[in-house]
Each structure stands twice: as C-alpha cells, then as structure tokens.
Length: 492
Ligand code: BG6
Image (cartoon, rainbow, N blue to C red; front, side):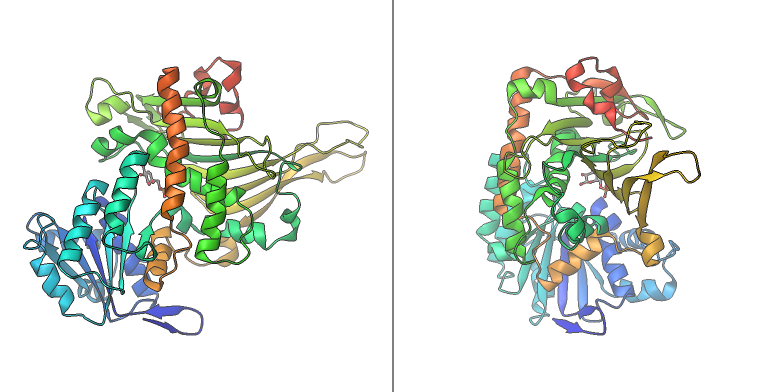
C-alpha cells in the first residue's frame, strides 16, 4: 500500500520473505537496504522481514550478524534505538527443504497477515527457485498480491535459464517476477537515462556519426572471497558480462522509449541485445581475451592466486574478460563497444566512456593534437560525470590548449547520501515497478549472445592468459597487435 507524502511515497503492509535469509547477500545488501528505507521513513510500521534458514536458526547469532552490517548515514553502527525498531520487524523461520511440512511455520506466519503483500526474495542457488515456487504455490501462499524477486545467476546457460523460467512461471505470472540486476539500481546508471534523454546536447551526437567507440569497464580489486564454488562454475563472463555489463550496454545504446514505462524500456533494451553481433570462432581470437590472476600485490596487500583462493591445482575459469563487440543497427554501425571486467585488478572502478570522434579539421596554427571529446560516466567508487573538452590555456602568445574536464560530482552537487542500489530496487518491487528488472525475453537474448562467446571460446580453444593480481589484467602480456586495444585506455 502506498501513500504520497511531500516528496516521497511511503509503503506499508507487506512481508519480505528472504530465502537464503542467512546468506551473505542478505546480510550485506538486503537487510541494510530495508533498514535505510526505514530510517528514511519510506517504509513504516506495518511490515515484516522473514529470514528463511535451512538449519535451525540461532537467533542471537543471526540478529548480531544483521546488526553488524547496519550502518547509519555517517557509516556509524546503528544506535540502540534504530536497531530495536528494526529488530522488531525480523522473524527467523526454518524451512529445511521445499516441502509442505517444512513450510508449515512460514504458512502460518503469512496467514496472520491476509491484508499484506508478500514479496518472496529468492537469494539461493537458482536450482532451488523452481522447487521453492512450487511449494509456495502448494501451500496456497501465492496470490495476486505476491511478487517474487530472483537473484542472479539465473541458470548457467540458455537452456537452464529457460527451464528455471518455466518452473517459476508455473507459480507466478510474468508481471509478478522481478529479475534483479543491482547495476540498474545504481544512481549514475539511472542518470544515464536522464543524461541521454533529457539533454538536447546529446540527442544528435549519440551515434556512429559522432562516436568513435564506447568502453564499459568494471574493475574490482577484490578476489573471489567466500564464493569459490559458485565463481569457479561461472567465471567473469557469466558472473559480470552476461548481466551487469550487458545491461549497461543496453542503457547506453538503446533507442529512446516513447514513454518511461517498464515494457517500453524493456522492449528497447531487448532490441539492442538482439542486434549484438554474434561472436565467431575467428572473431573470438582477435576480439576477446580471458585471463586468470596469479599472486600479486593489491594496493599494498600481498594476495593469493586464483587457484590458491579456490584451493585447486587447476581451473580453466577466467577471472578477467575483455571483449569487443558491435551492435548491428542503423545507429551503431561499426562502432566498437569494448567490455572489460576483472577481479584482483589494480583498483576498484567502474565507468562508461563515450569516446567521440576526432574534430573534422584543425584550424589552429600550432597543429598540436586536439584530443577527442570524452564523456565519462563513473559508477564507482565515486559517482561522477565528466565531459572532457579542449580548453584554451590562459595567457598571451597564441593558442595553446589542453583537455579539461567539466565535472559533476554527485556527492558535491546533491550533498546527501546516495541510496544503495538495493534500496531503490526493493522499493520498486514493493511499489510494483518492473522498469529496472529484466524481462524473460531480455534474459534469453542475453544468454543467446553469451553462448556465442562461450561456444567460440571452445571452438577456438582459447585459454586464459595469466595476469598478476594488482595489475590491469593480461593486456600487457599480449603481443598480438589485434588485441592491443585492451590496454589502450585503462586509466591509472
Ligand atoms: C555481483 C557479482 O553480481 O556483482 C560479484 O556476482 C561482483 O562477483 C559484484 O563482485 C560487483 O558489484 P558492485 O556493486 O560491488 O560493483
């Protein structure tokens, strides 16, 4: 139920049921997101969070762990008063396996709130999504007021993703399904829509006539942390490119929807995914690189190799991928899109760089090189937009110029805490807005293209290039001129 106050909507009368309630994601992202929305007064008294555990819940330990991750706006631990208010909302329920008797306690809990919406948040391996949905349905817990949130990865191939979808949609209708990609909840990613579609400046320069290439980079300094088993089955391509990087690419490249409505936006994103040029055995050799990190030093700390991190003698899993692709449509004819991501890189940063073409003719007498304009959309660690443009260096003595950034720093400009991606996305689920969630056909199209990459890797027998942790990845060690683009614009 939503109510409008002066500038934000407030929500109440809902239960959020988190399967995988004692998992890492729940502690790090889901509970803190709910906590902050509560502190901001956007969700108030009438709601519950139900953490589902498979083992008998050790309530004091689980509570302590929830509290450990709740930080206030100034990054201070939650006060007793804040914690007590939030704590009242949390209930732990064991459901050992997806069957009616294991779900008895959950069923009786939810039946106490017939007027509440139910949000089922599946933060478990996706192989459990089907059985959980079926059991919820058998227990009579799904109705028109139910929604389901699905965490990635949704399967590990087109076939498995389709299968999961069939199982989910036997219990929920598509309008009740929220496939989450937390990159779409990031503030600067949201701002991409405003930047592109609310500024005339970019309306006629956003195409192959004006743009030379587009680069999307998500560089992480972290390794695989506690997720060795999952990561070793996925690798960077499935963990990051299949979802986050492709979603960013869609927002950069899509046509303007005629209105900002969920299906209109998703239709445009789907067209981009369908127009991606399939990778082939030949193009994989020149246009893709995959790598795996060895021991190294990341920002002053000596770290293990990937193999040591996962405790294995060998693994073919890539922890770095860089690839070049094209969108075969009118707007983007022959504009390369470079996608790169890796773990244990030199530092954490994510950005989208729009590299504009060279100016047609240099009129300045010195004929010094004129740098091309660049629009840099920085997603993290800080959220910022920079437009790099040539500027005259002040003073007499002819025209001298250099590139200077016109810069918008979100924190400086808005002077307020930026909500975490999960906060926005959870509120969108509560309010029933699917714009920032992937539709099944989008997911399918993303898988179809990704499988051209995995197939071409198999056919071309491409292997990992080793790179030292704490560097910008394998680019430096690649001598093939066809792939020298990889290092060209990593930024120190
Ligand atoms: C997750 C991936 O989806 O995104 C992780 O599974 C990755 O491997 C994470 O570390 C990165 O998210 P963020 O928001 O920290 O860039």
